[in-house]
Amino acid sequence: MQIETSQSSEEILLQLKNELIKAGEGDGRYFRVFNLSSVKAAGLSADSRMVVLRAFNDEWEFEFYTDIRSSKIEQIRTCPKVSALFWDPENRIQVRIDAESSVHNRDIISEEKWSLVQGDAQKAYTSLVAPGTPIEKPGEAHKWPEVFSSDYFSVVRCAANNIKILQLSGREHLALEFRRNKIKSAWIGKWIAP
Ligand SMILES: Cc1cc2nc3c(=O)[nH]c(=O)nc-3n(C[C@H](O)[C@H](O)[C@H](O)COP(=O)(O)O)c2cc1C
Picture (cartoon, rainbow, N blue to C red):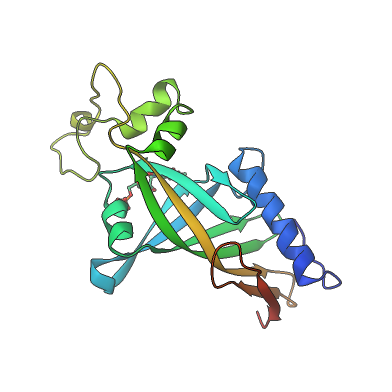
């Protein structure tokens, strides 16, 4: 996507949403992988890591998959406020989306999504040794049960409430901010100084 100064904030938001929906379907070029930040240790610091965008819908809700034993889960359960950072290097666009997240494990949502995770991809959520466990040698972590189960597979669903877009364009960078109070309410957007 490319932002033009002649566009309205509504047009830009719609354009962005369509890019993110495509990325969630595995079709987009750049927004498929993003940085997810969560609050760590009772708000004393933040943790960031890359995750894959698995779905993005019309209501600005998006999902990624993870192992329920990973440290991000405890952080999100303690503080559901997360920040997702996307980067399109071709158009030099950074998008930061703040969201309220919820964790789905061993429920209808996670079971439905687990059915889409096929073959070796299931290994990312079924290791015998929990993510983050100290080990003596790398091979110790490369062990899986004979039958893969969805016990540790989790879907983190995030509902966006704030969006900041920055497009680097020479010296005349462009930036916008959008806010909404709750999911399904209208976005209020404005240009901001980059
Ligand atoms: C390109 C890339 C994509 C990744 N995608 C995921 C993902 O979709 N889900 C996930 O749990 N970890 C993913 N990871 C691994 C995480 O970045 C992280 O190392 C791991 O989940 C443990 O994070 P935590 O200890 O902060 O919970 C990915 C890493 C990279 C480099």
